[in-house]
Image (cartoon, rainbow over all chains, first blue to last red; front, side):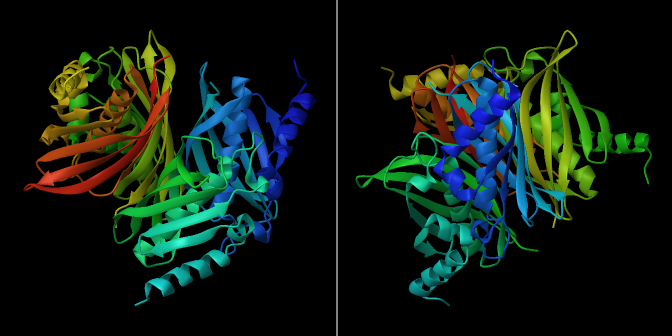
Length: 138
Length: 138
Length: 138
Length: 138
């Protein structure tokens, strides 16, 4: 049985193996079974033509957070089967934060939800909500 | 009225203004009203821990292709309201290609669909399918 | 300004005008701005071939609850633009209950979420989760 | 191996066992592996307060068509895992028709898409598009 610190360290080790997460500068700032928080600094490289966070950065955060939440709830290697995301506000600020949690866990899958926030002057504003299915690898 | 070449050039100019699309190396390889094709080379930086394309890269392609398809169908500045994506096969190969088209266009929105393919040894394999809503900016 | 009782009565009047909701026996059991609860008795007419609630009944509840939550949050006539639903357990029991709430409300739309439960021997079990967009009529 | 007529008859026998499909008057008008067409007559009982097809009727058609398409592609008892639907036009007319097909079939699941049309004076108009996942029962 892992301690909370070991669990977080394990999650960070997985994230560090994802070339794409390293490229984007994603950090795992909280992680426990079925629950995760990821953050990244919103650099110009992560924006679209209007200066907002690119939708693809926000969907990356949603995809990855749902997968970490589902995988840690299922205690097994997983695949992301699908998700849907609603963008509700442009991503403006210094950082993006996503919080995901497993809502319904069975033997083979976890349905998870997450919310993505933009942080400006320490104020969090909701940017997107997602819901998806994480499945155990066969 | 733009010629097909001018339309493609206009799309490429928009893509070049997206810091995130430049970071990922995305290229616009076909573009006409309501229809688009984007591609990128699958480098290690775009992968996850198992060596496949990261889900966030695939969702970026879907998000961006849906938005280009919807925006060009609506002939107006747009926002991506939402989309859903199903991953059906790991993204393995040299390149990823996404093709999107507007399916239902009204005065205020376009519902679009796209398919993402991984290309290995010139063979395309379907990796993901998405469907989403692009809305005119108010 | 309506009292809570008047607000609930107004919602019930709308539901009573929906031929389909009357056919299914849906009842509005709680209603306030941005928040709603609908219920129905699970008769054989509402089942599929295995004796569970038909997915279409569960999706009806989700669709209607999201629309009531969004419409009451927007204080305007609305249309349901889209939603996604995950089924997580067969609908077995005497009743189905859905609870929806608006999560992100702008001038033109509300993104809402809901959960559908099956009630057996007074125990609620989560059957489905949905998320969708309700938009003001133009 | 079933003949096309036997395959259609088998599908109709399943539909006839769904109390909810009988209640709504749904008919299976075409059925082959991975492909299905369902129809129903749009009676007042299937409408909402503005006289259009209730969104729940349209989502029922989508849910059921996706399930028949996926089940017949997988040749096995199935469950509907999830779907998303975009409504693009009010359902006005004498009948509703849905056509679904399996787009990506693996050993354990089928990702399917469908389109729902309203038929008025023999003219079909697109009302909704859906995409979802059908999984083999464990």
